Image (cartoon, rainbow, N blue to C red; front, side):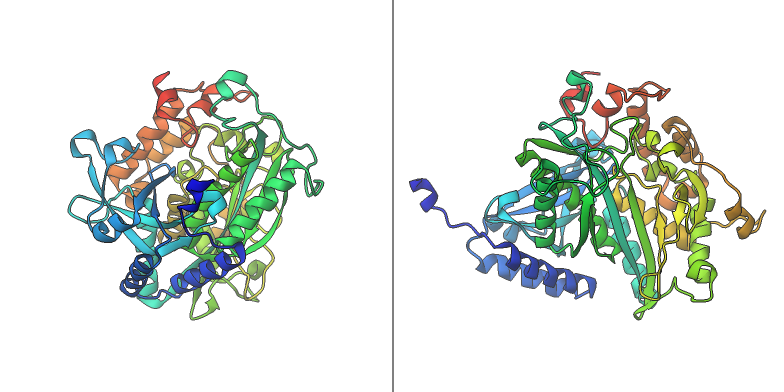
Length: 480
């Protein structure tokens, strides 16, 4: 078309995208000074005439990803004075204190595949700030960033994280939002674990999503259909904690967009279909200092060091307190069902997949712990921050030995109402999040819970899908 000839927007082939994004990721992981990175990025955007817009991302308290597209020329002039209406974001400011500032985290920069995001765009993550420029307490990404920066500044300790995010691919666009009309989800495949033909819809989706993740520097490892019908998982390499949390948000965004192009829906509800395995976000963590894995001890129990076991014991000791953070929706408590390898036991094990924490087989390089009880709809920043800070600073039980605590079996709450009650009454959560954020988060979860039947039963209820925090829009909430 003649109109298209008038446009010359940036389009980068996937192999070049991967090289560019891996280089940016390396600078970020090596903590290249932020002021130098900002200067370089702004100079690059000014010189690259084919970039038209910068997508700035931030996440609300529940973990929904929000995106604002700024005209490049405007952003370069106004990057230090960006504002948005915080009262429009659930869990952020009240109407009378609505204006919030949005800073740019220039190291968290991505070159974008144009067939996913459109030509001529780049992406960067934002930092939510108060009117006076100070950090906004409900911005959990900022919390995680500050905590990991403090760890590194203290003694160069780095937290490595790898998330295994499972999802379902269902027929039809907007299948979750239309669930209240149809009352069901339709599979695209019933092949099961590792089974799919090269050209079927599930395989096409996995291939396309994996290609886009590779191009964005995820450092892919493997991908495959999962146990349940139409279920998938795409694994990528471990990285620094904040980068890993950003990648969770991008993983879900890319999957949803690729699925939409196939007239399908990528769904990350923990248990969208009763009677089959649910979705998890198993989170692998390790600590390192000067290149040494601090969780490894060849002579330690299951190959873990004392630090590693202390880290686990603190997580187990606060398992019920933080359950609402790691299992953030009504639907999440369907997943904690022992009939489907559910990680609902507050214990650690090298072999029991029903344990909240697993110790995978590892060596000096790969020794780690795997927190299995995290659902894919959890706020990844809040979840990783909570697990990391709990493991390092959480309380230990003085009433019993760590060994006896690990050996006996306790269980996580099996419904969101109990999880909310424990969360609201936890002194540890106040120390972890602060009273204001604790109250805001509990209110959000209570609002969703009150819209759903208290008894889960054996069938997925329309309300737990319709009023799910990653699914709902203003129209559906106003229909309640």
